[in-house]
Length: 208
Image 1 (cartoon, rainbow, N blue to C red):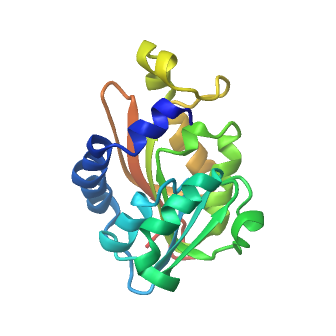
Image 2 (image 1 turned 90 degrees about the vertical axis):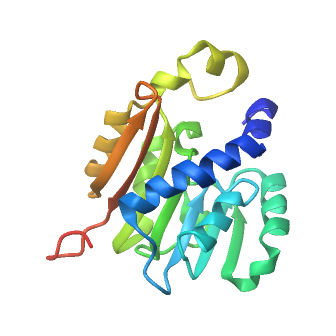
């Protein structure tokens, strides 16, 4: 992210939108987590999303990964009160084993608060999410689509990968390609933004 987007992401209006609109939508689509669930947030930034995962979604613990060491330090300060319920690591969402030692099926939930559209190899990131999810686990996502990134405001102010951007349909199709079942999703503002929840099926039993 450049300075403009970093400032926006950490602004009070952005956090209000996340807390008062996006989180309630995701809770309506996927519910709170099963007690004892350990969750993962990819692109955890300054830790506000991980705090919501703990407090609003009821995670027993959360692991957060981010490429920017400065963001990891900020997240560490914000989340220090949660002690060993939180583990943070610098690294890429496209290689969670290297960043966190994430085993196959290690997480009951994975959260994406507008990070996948920043990743050039976003398809690989989705594959890592699917790998890291436990059977019955859920992927909560809030994304920005190619439609939004093509708008003049986004082009002028922010920096994003210029190739292989995804539409809402392409993102959902990629989830299906990796074996995830989309439970519910919606787009808003002319398909600029996509929110939803997908589940990793339990062998022989469908999704949770």
